[in-house]
Amino acid sequence: MKRWIMVLPLAVFLLVAVFLYRGLYLDPAELPSAMIGKPFPAFALANVQGDRQLTEADLKGKPALVNVWATWCVSCKVEHPVLNKLAQQGVVIYGVNYKDVNADALKWLAEFHNPYLLDIRDEQGSLGLDLGVYGAPETFFIDAKGIIRDKYVGVIDETVWREKLAPVYQALVDEAKP
Image (cartoon, rainbow, N blue to C red; front, side):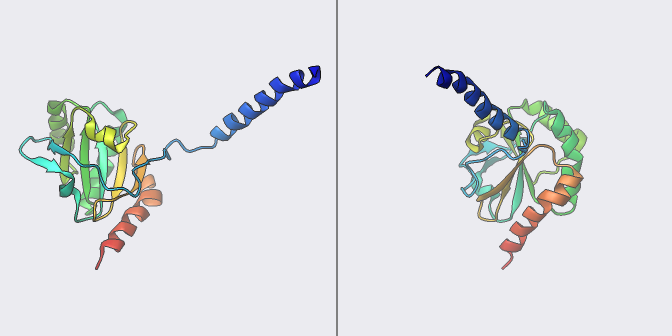
């Protein structure tokens, strides 16, 4: 009986150590999303410019990236030039300005250029909550029907785009062709 009591803490320690060791090899950019395979959440929010009301229906028709960004996000500033370049190459990108001051977002887009075909103002974070956003930047891939097909958490740089994300986007574009 005493032997069992002495072995139990060791067994618990080894079990915890195995789980922690496994965690060292997980990719933090691969956060699970319950939204994969589901329609983009319903919303009715103004655009950043404030001259138009947008809904999820506005995102349908073409495969696209939906990029969650904010002016308070340092990583978003690093990512922004790459998004501008992708937009110039014809990649369809919609922006969700997440939990931000709208005047700051307008200034940002004027200063750093606007890669977004549509830019959704999500000051309260309600759309971000519905999407399961952890923070910014996060990018969702939607198909032409508005179904979320993939998600990437973190900065999109040229290497990430070329090696990981361009094939995902291209597959959605190819799938949408008649």
